[in-house]
Length: 315
Image 1 (cartoon, one colour):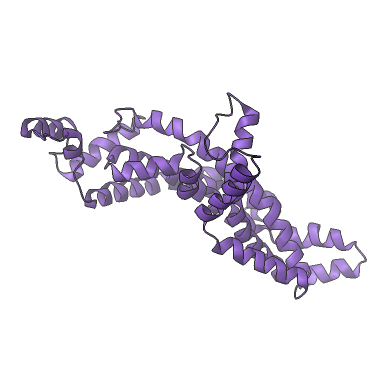
Image 2 (cartoon, one colour):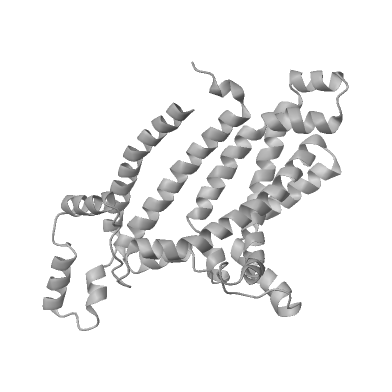
């Protein structure tokens, strides 16, 4: 397994290089000029020329990329053109709320989506199956921002059980942090639960009619043991893949949910950076998310090997 992990890590490096080249090139196509925004309303030509020279905008694009790539290789992601903070400091500040929201949302999705998918597959064609499919379709169709506003009206304005907006750092107040994150996690996790439910149902239906499942039932094993030990274990592969991809998407930022609940996470940082033409921040966020996706896919492959011993055999 160690050799497999090392090979995958070796493949990640050129992938990240390609991603960095792509995002560096495409952001140059964005309308607007960050130097003009930094120069203020007067837009003194001398100041503009000085800023272009200072930040290297006078150099050709390939030279700019090589200069930035050299900095990244030494652990320097650059500096924000708007806030004059280092990109690494901004990422360290905005990443914890997004990671927490992603973990809580995925937990909600796993707790709700997987049992619902198993029940729907086991009781295919019954009322349970129909209700689960209707609920899943609703979860896929309802916009997150609309659901978030409804929950705020119900639980914050009407019942006054939960805070409407805001983020409390976990280190400062763990209880207050979890209370503030309940509604955002339910909003995002509800949509993810619908996706996981559909994939779990499809995967379970594919294995319930398999020979080994029929053999296990013919041996007189308990129905629950057949479902959980035999059918569900072999249906885990697409579920693990989907869970990994969903978690990677959440690390990119649940933009609308973070806006509705005013959570200072990756999504808001990315949107603000694009609007402000803050190139260094955009590059840093995209590179960080791309690296997270690659590591999560590697983690999914390792989990495959732990689930299925046949994958660990040398070929």
